[in-house]
Length: 457
Image (cartoon, rainbow, N blue to C red; front, side, top):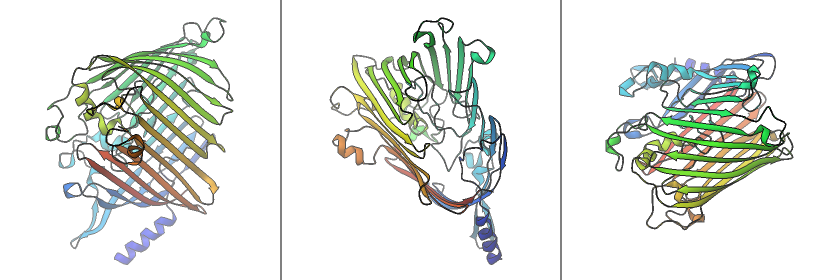
């Protein structure tokens, strides 16, 4: 029996489906489907230890014009976990509130949709993306910037929403609306931005395309992903919603694809009685190099881009900081980014660094805005170096808090690290994913890894 099972699994490897997150085909009507087989190492064992689960997935994908939908039907299991049991199914993927995990029917079954999308943000007057989203940004990102609902993958997938409607859709380009949420099953983090172009009907150069926006983002449950907040030192016993709001102005100075350039300004208010503002510009050179710079004016206690890419990992600790009134003197800060995208986005690198114009505080504080913060992304696309291609990311908070700037930069404490390495031969792809995320409650890393074989058909 075991030999038959092993033979069947080896056969399925040869038919493994396309890798998770693959972009839908650009053809007017296209259909792809496949199977994938791999292993997820998840922190699911007793006492938080990791266990290996075999996964078998079926992922059909259909694209029609601007519309696309992908379905993820993945089964994670163990073969012969005990002498008297042939198969054990990973129950958190299928059973609501299993062992009191708090997952509802929608928490489990909405993410079976890998994605649903229509249109492209920034290009189409109507766009929508649902599912796993890594870049939920409202306006200039001073309140919600590159927020991701993928922090708990591969253990848990969330189903989010980003949708925008520009009045140009109905020949009224004066108004527009953006909406975002990281989890449609819970509506925990909800964001909205209403914007206007009051001068779009005039012929005044440059400012006729100026955009005024109002942004509101609310976290209805900062402790949503904390099982027992009272057991973690420093966290209040209970939480209440966190609301951040503000206004922004964006002025496109140069258009086109070769040298686009925009200037912008933001002001925002956070619940600990602190405020922040910024002036900046950003653009692209020759369609190859991206750049951006900001000068920030922050009140003590203010955190720029409060809803950032790792917000779901640290939201409870940010809430504990926001729960205490702050406010006070203003100080200046800075932000700079530089990146490149070559060979049709097959060779990508982006780095950003921000921090305050003041010495590292003594004694240390819990406000990440008091310290420099670095982020880097790198991508080597398929076809550049044989069959190898990869994506890598590194984000580091609190630079200089424990050691010097450079020492802390290479110390993984308070960092989030991601790596996906692929090797393709023929139509088959072998993928290894590794994620290490600093857990502030445990003062240690939570590490997850995945290995899978796949093939498009």
